[in-house]
Length: 150
Image 1 (tube, helix red, strand yellow):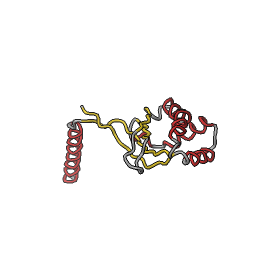
Image 2 (image 1 turned 180 degrees about the vertical axis):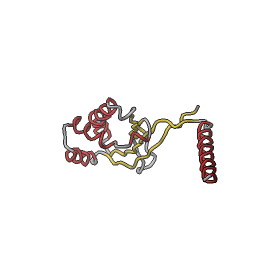
Image 3 (image 1 turned 90 degrees about the horizontal axis):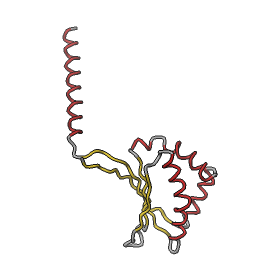
Image 4 (image 1 turned 90 degrees about the vertical axis):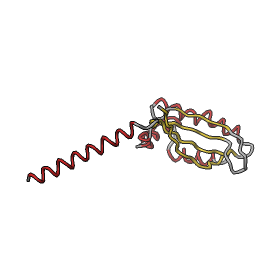
């Protein structure tokens, strides 16, 4: 029994040391993990840039403002760029969240806001998304995280 207690005590001490070392290493980093953004690359169809921007200004902005008011997103922005090739985006949509935990249960929190904001069912919103496909092509999206320098 005495050997068993000693072994458990040694194991507990080793675990405590490992945890303290890990915490110290994290504290030594020259940065902390900041907000997380989803950057969506968009290519508008020829002649549809103004129509798509009008949709962003009305419906997209309305939904982003509602999500911001609900505390789901920290902010959002639209960036324009000049595509260097026909396969590159001319717009970037950026939505910023507090952290990665903000994505847990995100659909369950956003869906009611979207239905209320647009007074539409999920099926109607899906159909509207298909119609927007005539104005633009989503080329992809990526998740980026700000690293805040200390």
